[in-house]
Image (cartoon, rainbow, N blue to C red):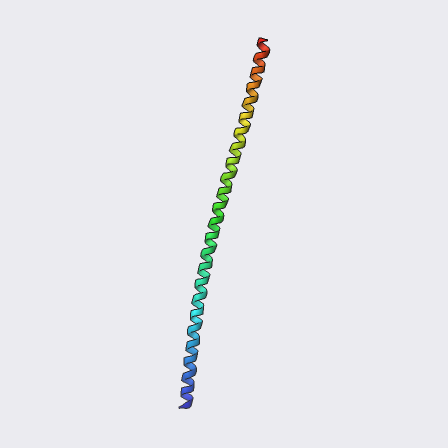
Length: 89
């Protein structure tokens, strides 16, 4: 009888240990899921930042193009005025 009760106690203790281990495993999987979600959000943020940077570079290119066009048109106007002055003076 004593041996049977000892075996029963050890079995109960083993069952409790197994339950705790299962709970620990569940918590670890939840932590892993949260970490993957965080990583996904970080990648989305990085993608948005790269898109913003691309748009900024496009805006800068357009600004430089318009500036060069303005400068060229001003130079052309001055050249035209020079030609007219030379013609009529």
